[in-house]
Image (cartoon, rainbow, N blue to C red; front, side):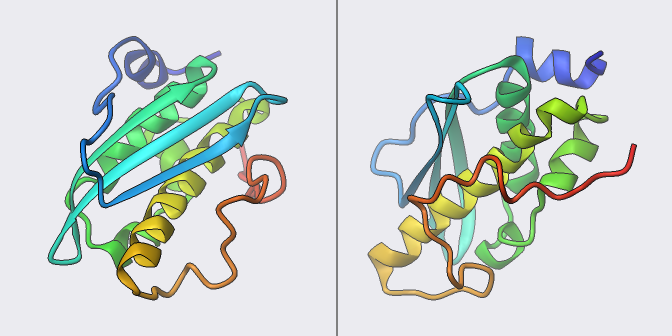
Length: 147
C-alpha cells in the first residue's frame, strides 16, 4: 500500500521539467529495473536556487523525485549532500520495501547533479569522495530502513 503522500506526489509531482543551462545534471538508474531519474540544479552562491526532475519509472520513483526536490530546494550544496534516502522515505510517509531503491535513486541523482556541478567548476565537496556518476547505484547502496 502507498501512503496518501506518495499518491499525491505521483499524481501531482512538484518541480517536473528541465532547467535550461542547468549548473549540474545528474542521471541514474537503468533500463533493467525500469527507473531512470534525471535531476537538474541551478546554483547561486553555493545554494541550490532551483531544482527540477524528469523521471521515467514507477509511481514510487516519481514520488521520490518530487519530494526530494522539495527537500533540496534552497539548501546549500553541503546541506544537500547530507540528504539521505531515509529522509526521502520519511517525507513520503514510507515506501513498500521493494520500492526503497526509488529513494536511493533520488539521493544518487542529486549527488550526480552536484558532482557534475563540482566537476564543471573545479570544486570538491565532502560527501562526493569516490562517487562515480556512471556506477549502477540503484540496487547496492540501499540503506536498511526498519518498518
